[in-house]
Structure formats: structure tokens, C-alpha cells
Length: 521
Ligand SMILES: [Zn+2]
Image (cartoon, rainbow, N blue to C red; front, top):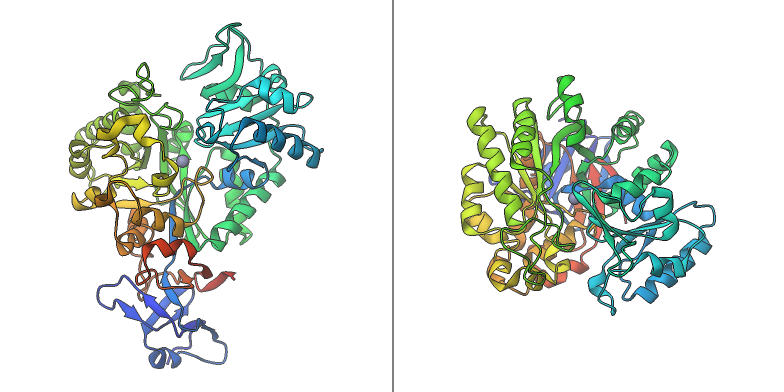
């Protein structure tokens, strides 16, 4: 009998393999599963060199995958000022003061995740608020959505933002009386300040990535669809991979600004190895609902003069999508408002008409404000809905933003499934918490529009089977069966039998990637 490198025994395994839905144990060789069965069957694979992992009856599920995460941003965020949970501008000022004192070596005070919706003042903070906290150093803090930021006077000066600064695809808000920038910057206007921020060194970037990976495996993730921002990040990931410092599998999301370069090289989705491969081209079509920059067909209910904004004209989007599609790339288009989704659907329809391609697996990221027609069109075009279930809870103001009628069709997970659209789930971390368990909890326990709740099994599939499909890797992962990677997540409780409300309390006991324990509680 074949000696295994690793066996996992005494487990309650949810395999998602229809031919063998449940099992107690599995054996691993060369990073792949070679047998799945009962304890007795698998014990026969134990030899002198075999590592035996007895999980003591705990639940084992296929390794969880996060289909939308900004890992470097997450790592960066772990090292910067976190304003999540701050409930007033006064408290925000206090946090800024304290952080500045505790981090004297930092030349900029950076961070974010503030949410003015939670502030008692119910308004955006301004440069003058920040100046009161810290004026001798530049301060730049991004809103929780990532599409709006606030800078203090020093930061605006360094960025050269003044009274007459105009930005394409963005906005510099001004004070109504003086006409001076009030510190709030939207969309592309954020870039003005980013350009003034000193670039992190390669070592700092590496540290951020490593910290983010550590957090990811602690949360039970065996893979991430890692959205990168720059060539530096891509280079760094290759270095980490070569040095065996990547504890989990990475499917890369490449920004559209690198499309021309990467297409010229002849590279396309799927290039790479088992740990690190090229995934999709990421395109932004609109902003966020939180910041009212998501493009809607009808005005925002709580600000009737605003529709949000499309970041690309239809013509430009069509061109971009067609180019990537033709070159063999999977596309992942960020579209939140119904107008943005409609525009994205047009672009995909156009590309598929001009250049029919089976099995393209193009995705719409977030895909928030839908309606039955848009959903059916998604199905017809065979698009994947790449969603982040935790938004259901974070976007508690959705009813105000879009009104009851449209709110019914925000994150309609069950309808998407019923209509035959593949849903793949992720976190959008650091916008939302990275925990896939919190995502499963959110997808199954929403309190409004109960009919859109998924079952726990359905939700779990969106992080496993469907996540594998979303990266063309259904033959390699997503289920626990012979031949697939030995990627598993060990949980403290059986997700499928506890009440969904309790999922928030479930702990990750162990994370295994390719038969190797990358996290243990
Ligand atoms: Zn994102």
C-alpha cells in the first residue's frame, strides 16, 4: 500500500463530492489527495514517515477561497490607523492624535475605514477637523468604501490641491462659502494625494503582504483571488512564491492599466504555477453606494440630484473589454450600480458577439443593484456574480440610498442562484473583514428580504466549489476528492448543522494547503 505523506483522521468531512458526500479521513501525497474514506481505510496509508493529523472529530471542509481581496491593501491597513468603529468626528480626532504620538517615525498619518454614516455629526470630516488633531504632519484617511478620502491642509499642500484643481473621473469638494477645498476627495481625486505619499519600500510592501497572508490563513483561507495594483506588487509576489513564503494559493487580479503591457507579452489567464497564477483583468466601471458614486439609472433616493458616475464611457469600456477578452483574459468588472451593471453587460455582449468564446467565465465584481432583467441577462451571457456577502450587513443604509423598491434587488443572492447564475464569494477586505465565516453568516442571516438568504450549504459552496470554478480550477480544488489539492479548512463546529446565527462564533482550528499545515489554533 502506498505510504502517504500526510493523513487526516477522525474528521467529519464535508467533501462536496456527490459520489462520496461524507468521509472521516483522507490521505495526501505530493500535496494532493490520494484517498478519501473511513478512518480504517485511511489508516492503511500510514507508514513510518507519514504525518498523522488527528482532528478529534472536528468538521473539515474544502479549503475556503476568498474571490475578491486586496491583500496588499489589507496588509498596509494592518499597519495604519484603523478608524473602523469610530462613532464621531471628535473620536476620530482623538484617534489621529494618539496614533501620531505612538508612531513618531511615520512621515504621513495614513489609514482609514471611517464611516460618516456612523458619526453622530452625520457629515463628512473636513481638512479643518483633521488640522485640529494634527497639523504638523500630512494626514490622509480613506473612507470605508475606498472611494472617498479626507486630507488635512498639510497633505493638500503637498499634493498641490487648491481652489482650482479639477480632476477627470473624480472630484475635489469645496467649502460652500470660501470655495476652498474642504479636504474631501472623491474617486480619481484621491490619486492626487497618493502621488505625494512616499512609496512604501520593497521591504515594507513585503511585510504588508506577509502579514496579510498570515491573517488570511488564520481565517481559514487556503486561496485568495488577490487584486494587485502595480507591477511592483506582481514582482514581489513572484519573489515570495519563489522563496516559499506564500502560505496560500494566489489567483491574481491584474489592473486594467497593465493590460496593454501584459497582452503584448502574450500572457493570459491561467499562466503561472500551483501557488501563483495570472487570473483576471480588473476593470472599474463605477464607485460605491456608500459614497454615492456607484452609477444608478435613477437618482439616489437620499440625494435626488445625484446618479453616481460611470468611470468609463460605453465606447471605452467596450474597447477595453474586447481587447482583454480577445487576448484570452478573464475579466472581472467592478460594477455596483444598476447603470454600471447594464453598461458592463453591454460591453460583454459586444465582446462575445465580435469574438465568441466558450467558457470565458467573465465576472461582475460586487454586482449589487440588480433587477430580474439584469439577472437574466447575466445568465444569458454566462457571467459569474462575484459577491461579498458581508456588505449585506455593512450597507445598512441601503434602503435610504436607493429606496425600498430597488433595495429589494440589492444583493439578491437566492434569485441569482435560482436563475442559474454562478455566485462566487469573497470579502473585499480591507473594506470588509476577511473572515469567510462572517461572509457565510451574512449570506444566510439577512434580516430584510429574507427570501434572498442562502442556505448554509449554498453559501459554503460559493467559497469552495464556485470559487474554484471562478478561477478555472474546478479540477484542482473546491471539493475534497482524489486527485485534488489537499487544501482543507478545519472548523470548531459543523456549519451545516448549527443555526446560521451561530456561524459567527465558529473558530478556524487549522488551515492546510497542499497537505501542509499553514495555520493551527
Ligand atoms: Zn474590491
